[in-house]
Length: 281
Ligand code: NDP
Image 1 (cartoon, protein in one colour):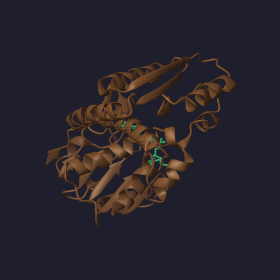
Image 2 (cartoon, rainbow, N blue to C red):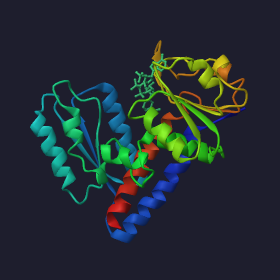
Image 3 (cartoon, helix red, strand yellow):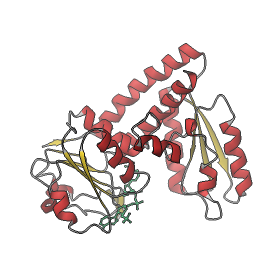
Image 4 (cartoon, protein in one colour):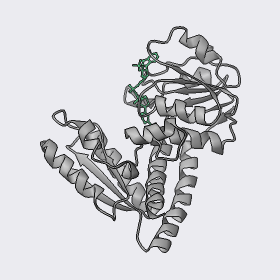
């Protein structure tokens, strides 16, 4: 059994990103620019935003941090995003979610043009993914694909099962695996016979948000198991997979923490560079 080291893989990718960002700067005489918008004072969001800005600095990407008060109006938030959309120094825009309750997140996100949508959440980018066309793909599922690729996991013709169908993880994950020639099944809260579906998977991706949901009896001997879940139990981070028992059956498995998690910011930075490269073409 091999433990997939997301921390090391993310560090390798970040080193590659520094080279890509520097090459962009040398060729176009400006830095890749990523704008990060944080509205309100949610402590978890503050940590995520800080890490994203640090990641930019580390990769040689120029970050534009915008902090709006929790009571900003809908118009105020939209106006900021529209001004970033019009700014040539900004190649990617990220609005940290969740937003304070009085704001309509969909309308604010709609102000981000698809070409600057580094999170890949827009209808245009999800549509491009569904059509297997070039576009920006959500960072977490993209990070999973990168882990599979770098650990030499064959997807073509393999049976892949994704548990979860959210717009930010499960759904794009299933489309990416389909585009990579896997035979894909998506399970969710209404699936009948979920354990049997999972037990047929060569590649099993868990993105549910329920600690230790996937147990050894749901896993085929030798399967590749990817745990996207991040759950806090008694102050400790734990995934959606019962690691202790499943790791005895899997051929490859991601731990939590240190598996998929570190890949997400690396892929965000990669998406920002890709947006800049496409805009400059
Ligand atoms: P959502 O809550 O949006 O989606 C959860 C999905 O799991 C839904 O599709 C839901 O089904 C399904 N589900 C819930 N309960 C069951 C059940 N009992 N049986 C089968 N399916 C079930 O979560 P996200 O997709 O946003 O996130 C999933 C997990 O991944 C979370 O733990 C989150 O913290 C983590 N995460 C990790 C990231 C990382 O960087 N590593 C980034 C983003 C998320 P239905 O659609 O029917 O409701």
